[in-house]
Length: 159
Image (tube, rainbow, N blue to C red):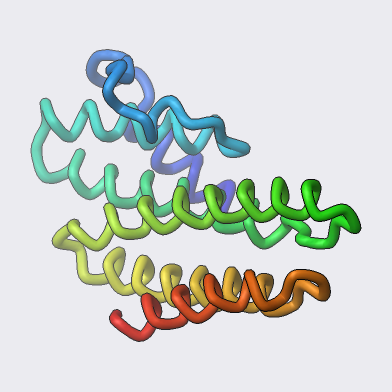
């Protein structure tokens, strides 16, 4: 992944204006554990607006790298707190992380590159499976999380 990030960074670095997220853009302002990948994707978005097909291809690759990073952050999260409030806080962070990665993969689906779209579809399926499995593994409050897991499974089946 580092090699891919380096290649996309080489395409994006120093080209075009620096991306400055607008106040309305909540995803650009959301906290992230992947600041380098997000910055790269944001710069690629800006360059794609001002450039041609090469920049649009770089954009898809940059966003896919960001999605994969956010996906891995979710994979590393735990839902194992003993206290109900702490467990709910872990659940909220995991759910937000799930939506962040899902939105990024969904963005890649809009690109014309079939290879990138296929990778995004696979990433989305894996992401849904990961989140559903995490929710089903929670020993306490399992019934509450089961409803969310079922909804996530239904979303995955809609691909």
